[in-house]
Amino acid sequence: MSFIEKDKKTEITDTIECVEALAKIVKDNDLGRLKISTEDIDIVIEGRRCPPPMPMPVPMAAPAAVAAAAPAAATAPEAEAAPVSGNIVTSPIVGTFYAAPSPDKAPFVKVGDTVSTGDVVCIIESMKLMNEINSEFSGRVAEIFVNNGEPVEYGQKLMRIE
Image 1: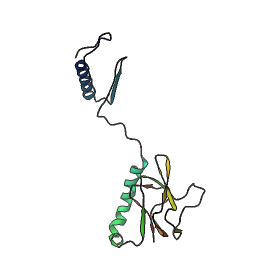
Image 2 (image 1 turned 180 degrees about the vertical axis):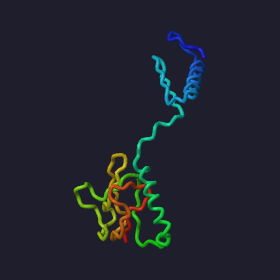
Image 3 (image 1 turned 30 degrees about the horizontal axis):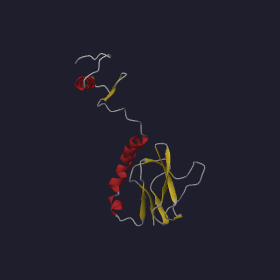
Image 4 (image 1 turned 135 degrees about the vertical axis):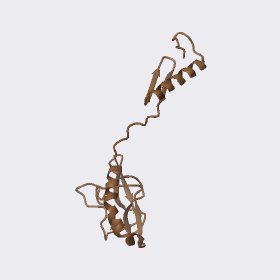
């Protein structure tokens, strides 16, 4: 690799060789990112190292709930095999389920309440955003599968409407 003087214009091949050499340094040293800036050029090389994962309570809480529910599921396979009457409202996103608009307010719906298509039935907080979940069905709320404040996954059953 040749070093480039600031006063001279460099050929593109010299620049490519330089970038390749820098990429090798990033790879060999397992660097996350290397940035070099001059008056004429900016070079940023991203390594393969993934950024540290952001702490997410949803995946951490889910295995414990699944592990706790495993014995119950093993003893009641007939309950899962039985057809469920009514329509199921599922979570469109990963987040935290909230039954009410705020802790001091009444829940949007309770078992036995009647809902119409488009009514807000809960909120799912995801990435600090409160997402209102609307019912796709009209009918009576027969069952709510999630408790207030619990994490939910994409596609998880939230409630059954008959």
